[in-house]
Amino acid sequence: MIARISGTLLHKSVDYVIVDAQGIGYRVFVPLTTYYELPEAGDTVALNIHTSVKQDGIHLFGFHTGGEKNIFQLMLSVNGIGPRLAMNILSGISADELIHAVSQGDIRRLVHIPGVGKKMAERMIVELRDKVGKIECEEIGSGAGRNTDECEQIMEDALSALVNLGYRRSAAQNVLDSIIEKRPDTITLDVLLKKSLKILAG
Image (cartoon, rainbow, N blue to C red; front, side):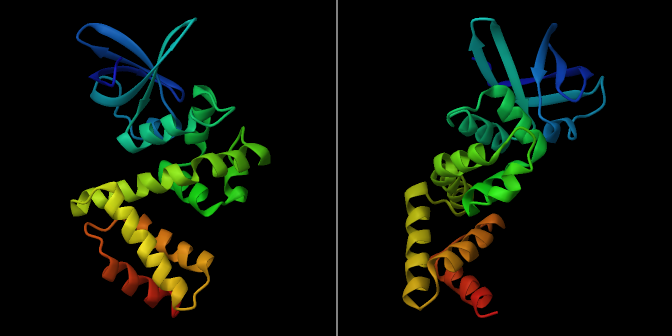
């Protein structure tokens, strides 16, 4: 399977590009979020690739960042979402915004994406909420040299502590999520609690 392509950008359009890699031209479908990051035709480009093998052929989907590729692959696990719809979703919302909307259960934001109705938005939240939470945790934990289990334990301990202090679980979770989005280089239980208490105290 092709996981990455680096070469000369021969052609770019809002839905696909052609990349020349060692004399072979690859057609790669891209979301708008990646299109906006592309260089001019003739320049060198590198894309993270998801390879889809179907009866009608092999299709390549390219992304500017590994995070976009990860989110794309997660969306394919949702019942009713195929590669085309997943690309359409990433063209209507950034990977970071999508993670936030799903983790917060923000149906209103999701239904504003072309092709996503209320039922699909609800399904995305139900099927992806835990998965995107792990992605957030992994991105934070990697900067601190922790593994995912340790990071998740810190988040659980912080939430439990805030609830025990009398804060509503939903409010505490929202605050913790907002801190996670900023992706600090280091994360400890002490830091999480201090930041959370400061925000909750207003």
